[in-house]
Amino acid sequence: MSSQAQNPTTKLLVLWDQVFKKEGITKDEAIIKEVANLSGRALESDQMRLRLLVLKNALKVKLLGDDFPAFADSWSRETFLSYYSLKENYSEFLPDLIGKSQNFSVQNEFQKSLARDEWSGRDIKNLINFEPRYSWGFFKYRNEPTLYMFCRHNREHPCLMVMKDKNGRLVREANGQVWSQPKLALSGRGLPSHQVNGHTPQGVYLINSVMPSADQQKVFGKYRRLKLDFVESSRREKKLLRFIPDSLQKYSWWRENVVARDVGRILLRIHGTGLINDDPASSWYPFYPTSGCVASRENTYDGVTYKDQRLLLDTMMNASGLRAQYANETSLTGLLYVVNIDSKEEAVTLEEIAEHL
Image (cartoon, rainbow, N blue to C red; front, side, top):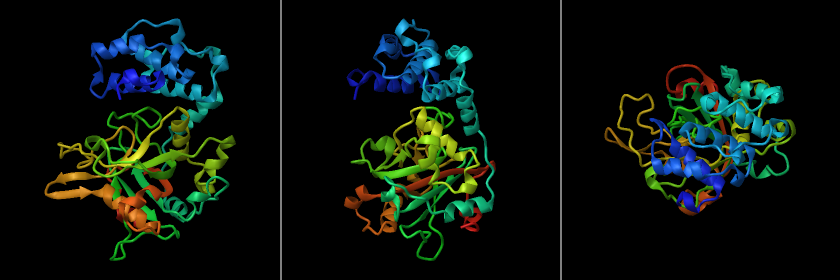
């Protein structure tokens, strides 16, 4: 779909992706013109107006009076979070808009989300053995598979995924070994989780079926991608915390999820790719980084053909008590936990995780 056919907010997000490239800010005159013609009046929220300010300042185009958000005195919690998030990475393009209106409680919440936890083996075991306290609206996720993805703080190293079936048992291979797959949760832009196109945020996700078709195969691969949704906001995050053991609520990992949700990150998925990693020296080889989704290995490397997304879908259907066939992919439901366990500079292995399962 062309940006001309999109609503202003969607158009802004598309332009954001086009302006901030990994190799630097765009110099494409057509894109610059589109940004210059976008007005804050047409945008649906002050969060989006903050992004427009950053875009226009980055491209040195004229600002209009309607481009600015309301006075900070009237900002929502979500707008303050967006402001602190943008200041973290784009401070040179975002003026001081809060002055004495600074919301210290929200700023503190944002800072907590940036903390780096170091997990013990007991922490891993507590998470794996935990049974969420399901409440009204979430019973559909009970007696469904649960996926756990253990990562490093440095997302340039692959994570490791394991799974429990609908009965709460670890999924195993035919030889009895715990089923696992390496995954990558690395932003192709190297951005943090609270930014658009940033690393896959830590936290709890609801798995809600698959995309209708395996389209855009060059980017997303040959197989349908799993849809990941945030747990909805609630007072003091009570709904989310029902999915987290009491002993692990003191850590920061789940706060990444909250901030990412509230600054407006959307469309997170688990998918493969048709893109080729042509750098065998990269620490994530043969993965290809994403714009924030969880990456599965695909394509042929060094004589080995990978189809991890296909195997993940089939394994999850079996763990759900479903026949592993295309028609049943839309029935897939479950949970995903994403956790950075420590600061080691190497891929997470089954050997180091299995002893705590």
